Image 1 (tube, rainbow, N blue to C red):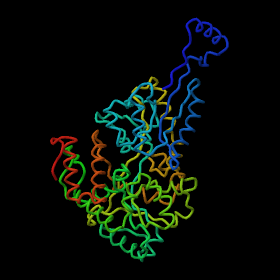
Image 2 (cartoon, rainbow, N blue to C red):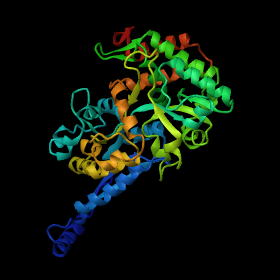
Image 3 (cartoon, rainbow, N blue to C red):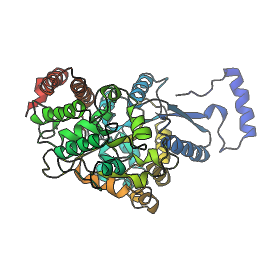
Image 4 (cartoon, rainbow, N blue to C red):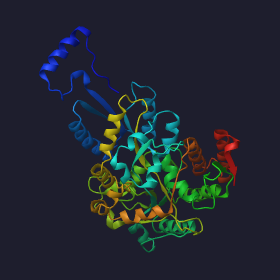
Length: 452
């Protein structure tokens, strides 16, 4: 955080006298000026938040004389952004006042002492009552307090190119009911055109949370197993569903129904998915987020005029078609105030400016987010944002959330390692599942695991 300019003692008195004569009582004096630093992610394909912050900076500075907003976007992917943010948060001299925070890191960062508890400040903000009650939980810490405010949320489904499926004789709209239905369709696509990638599911450590959120968890949560027992507050090990999920990935990759392992291990593979393979009809389907249209709509990173006509979206099915018939995953990002800020009131005030109805609506529309403010969700501009809003919003009914625990990020890395071991042929699904179980026990201790 930048500090006010210091003045020499002798000079200070002169300046103070001159300032008092030249300025009105309401104007800030030079040494009263404050700067709040905002750190967030910006990439070539993610500029929606930068636009919101640029607008919020103008609004905030106009309403708060003597306060400057220093926007410091970090150009990096999700994982690298998290690393750079964590480095900045270690020192009061480099920590931001307000920052962009992934929901899955909220509790671990609360434990690390990075996030300011916001309950008292939220009680003074009328806008807080407009937030969906379930969405508020995204910023909750283990002590029940709120430490971050959600920007939006998302769901995940199967995005498919209708032309590729129709070429393989698969009727559209397409809705697979079981895992076998996916494999059957993928094999038909491969037989109709061996050059296409029939069905993409991210795997490996290079794509980070994308691997689990747009891949493994859609499989695992569609079995009788789960990652974590909420009732026992323990991590599940030894489950058949975990092994079955790895086996599904192995089948996809062994039969060359997914991308080549070398592409899967490229952290930028998603750029080819959105920018080349789906628009050019070289990929049949992929598991991706509700934000997918943001890449293709006008002004997006990969504008595609025909996406609304050529693409369709389907629920990811449960393993055997059992209830509830589909699986989705939800996450999202938040804004938080750093616990080390010297200006908590100003930092919170900027946060509320950035998350006003006007700015939240702009962000949700431009980034194809699912609204967490009820007044935004009911706004005609939001409902008409893209042709898939109704479809992806309906996936909320079958969605799951990552375990909101401080040790989740370490568990996620272990899951990603298991998928990589399988798709590269290093280990069988049984061996990779056993390696995962051992890793979890080592990470959290035997007392925090349960065999199911």
